[in-house]
Structure formats: structure tokens, C-alpha cells
Image (cartoon, rainbow, N blue to C red; front, side, top):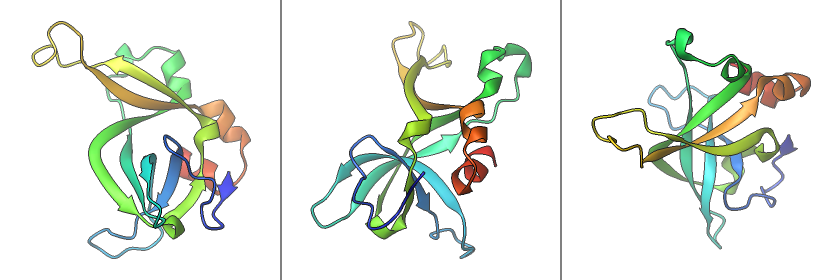
Length: 136
């Protein structure tokens, strides 16, 4: 985990953990994961929000996937300040694409979804704040 000391190390396509204090309840201490799209000269960072995948269809999940933490790219983008970056956590994630499962809008399987995969074993070995956030 790379702690924030002005987020100098943030680069395009990095996976970052971001403070999410924009929620309606005003509850502090919430976090989101995102991937960096662009970084402006003014220090603003445009990113795509990642959403942790929760699967209910356990019968269809491969044994290997149960040992992974999967984040799916959403359509939501955010512009954040450098000081909102808690840490850069790209070392834990591998970028993958998988075919969209919706056979009505994707009958031939040519559309894909961007996903970011972390191995639970690697995350559990990391002692600290990041592992607590990822395993949450």
C-alpha cells in the first residue's frame, strides 16, 4: 500500500482507493476503489468507479473465482483531488475483460466488461488498512 503524500505516484490506469465523503448521509470514513483515466496538470484526477462484485449464483462460480476479489468497472466517473487518494493499490490487481453475460443485448459475445481481479491470498498477506478495505 502506497500512502498518500500528495499522490505523486498516481498514473493513468492505476487502481486507487479514494475517500468517498460525497455520500448523502455525510458519513465520513467511506471508501471507493477506482481506476485513473486522466490526471490534469491542476492535480485533478478523473477516474472510473469500480464496484465490488457480489455473486449469488454460487453454483456457477468456478472454484478459482471464489479465491478472488473482483471489481467491475461501472459507467460512473468522478473527478477527485489528489488529497482524496488514500493509496495506490495497483500491485494487488490484474486487469481482465470478460464477455457480457446478457445474451439479449450481446447475442454474439462481442461486448466485454472490464474487471479488476485481486487474489484473496495476496490481500490477506498484506496486513493493514488496504486489506481491511478490500476484504470488507
